[in-house]
Length: 256
Image (cartoon, rainbow, N blue to C red; front, side, top):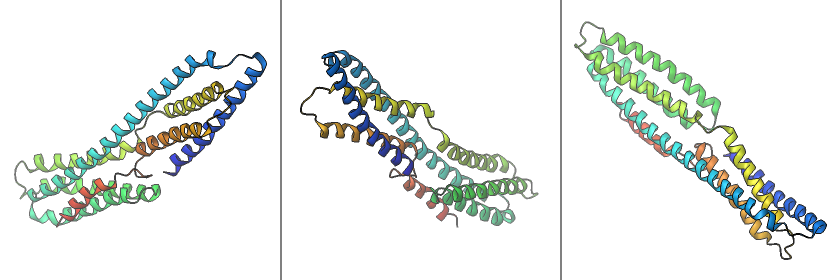
């Protein structure tokens, strides 16, 4: 994901900068007072690092939970479309062909909605097409259940299945918009920079400054934030849920 990747790269350089700036501040304090900053910052540094670790754990866990939920929702939608399509068999024969064509078009639109990501504009056009087909399917189904040759109780089997199909689409369209408040990520980045600043400050006076170790810390934190964002916004980066869409493709293939 370019957005997450840009944030991660910016964090990498910002953390390295905070490490260097913190060390510079610590050396100035050491030169002026002769007191090593370690004694006054060790407990504060430990508290900030502990808070950083806790926030990373919560944001990672939340992103992974939402990722798993989106995959489960994809399965639910595929099942809902397949069930509603099968219930068309209960309608009068004359009403079935046109309604089946609408179902096929709807399945194609739903597959294309996710297949065209990360092109948001193209995906949104498919969303609008699927909404129009939803209205068409519902109107045709309601009209079919009221035909003279419709079997009694048909509407109790067909309409709830179609309604569940429409609801599942709404759930899937809403799920990508559910994320933690932006302030959570701002706080995560701020804590990472504060930790780097304190770590650099505490290293003042060290003759052999371990830059590889500090660069490793910066890279690990930046990579962790990138992975969290990549999981939080799947389909836009290396973490994908495209494979789960095969279920919907299989359902479409079964619509003979």
